[in-house]
Length: 479
Image (cartoon, rainbow, N blue to C red; front, top):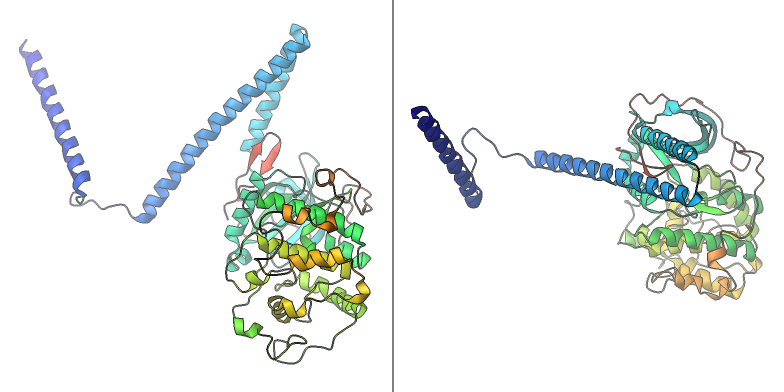
């Protein structure tokens, strides 16, 4: 009995100690008092890391639970279909075993980390300021993709990291036949790799250089598909900012898809002021960057030849071509989704005339013309554009307040130039141009590039990857 009383007293003293500690902690929290001597408050960096870890763990287990639920739902659907089909018990069990095997393979695939070693690099089909693009074959499956290899140091230097992450988010959300699919990404110490859908039809730039100009019917088809592509990304509150013929790719059937989200090349206009764009002393044409007068006015054919001679060089230079950039973007005064519709107007002009509306010998001169579009937007008589085409271009290449598309893509769709277009059937109908494609590795619709180094370095420290839904992949990069 005595021992029991001692034990009971000890228990009571422990409870009192606990309650006093709790009260002290509550008082400290109420009063915001400092921690006991010798202890330091966690820094903001530590708090951010804790919050990030918490978020990661919560998301991880949410996804795990969602994945289990989806797997259960797929099994229930299969069992219901088997019951309706009235298959034998043996067939029923065999199909369920096959289903479980495929689900296990799918989960194993989700955990697999991809690297450059998983792909065989083949022909180069593009290059630019950030890196190169080449077709590649996945060693495990034999599937052919386009591999975009981007130099991370260059992307960091140009402040493009957030844009790449925005591209990841967009492609995870948007499932559209107007958009080039991104299957996965990984990285090593030097490069970021994007594994994308390979479209063997080439790009709109190559098509325009081969054909010089398009008929209005051909242009109507491709401008229409571009409208649908821009609309699909705007619905997700995303601005492309770099829509140009180089980023409009054709599949083997000639249908157009939009690519290169978030990887636009910014033009360095930091040395220009708004007064530099003034037309007061130069109404006929822009001055060159060193103050020399611009070349005399060329005919449409001369301008076309001059543009084509310089087009490739500009596309692959570190400067890029500003010909399709809206004036509000150049002036850095704030812009919205309507800047993409300006780019559409510039592309439509090039399709019908043969060169962009504000092309000049030097990029800075082009910028001046774009900002002073009222003076420099002209339609050459020899191009013979219809009044409807001129009207649409003029309503795209104008002030933001008057620009078509500012209130939505429907403003452009109902324009008279598109009369007769069945928007919901555009991607089901025969394309305006069918590219010649012999096989899945055919690259004849892309420019030939000299191979300097045919090997892609091994990705010993490749980043993680995951999928967004069954049998499709999603970019998950940590640049």
